[in-house]
Length: 277
Image (cartoon, rainbow, N blue to C red; front, side, top):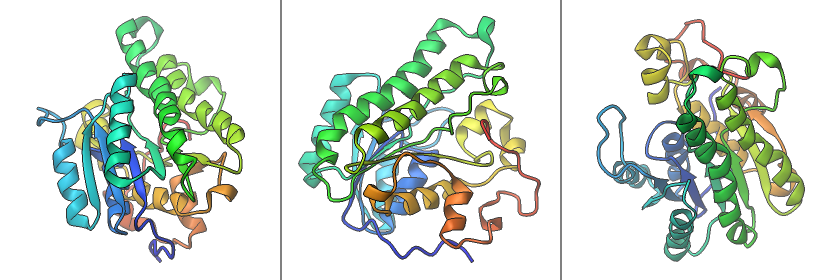
């Protein structure tokens, strides 16, 4: 059995950072199939030489899938940029129901090989960007009947093996997860705040460009598994669903999915586990 949802995001407004490609776009498209409003909040306005998609091509895909799209230029490192993007979203759709903190930067090197410029970039986008976007979105989320924040970040696992090879990256990603831990408690009963992370490698441009090319992507799953898992989380009652560090296939198994082969890039292949799992 594949994912067959009984709950819908129809008419809901999602503000998704980094939604011009990859997992963010997959979450956007899954919501769009329900007839959701999707704010594509990202920086890419012109075609990138090595990365697919812009906020405008993503918006076209969302509209084609059945949703309403608003492409907005948004740099999650800049408070004014985030505030402007959120204001545009509220003006267009009357409010925001869901924030997906998907934007992220990665640099997998050790301490002596990580320039502070890279350290700063990861922390500004991952940890600080997540905190900033949440802070700006919360006044609007608190007026929604079923508000959610979903961070694309891993379970908090304080083992040396997850830090020793790329401590700067791990700190930045765990910063996103710490936002879940803290905000879920702070807004308990009012906003659902959760994390979602893949069990396996996901075939995205980041993996293709940074972690081993097409050969590595062939040993992962497609971004659609994250889109389906996010949909399952974001359609649950926020009052009962908060403070969780979800894994994609566990979420879908709880929804009755028993066959995960359709998500495999290469059916039958032995899949590579993601970091922090």
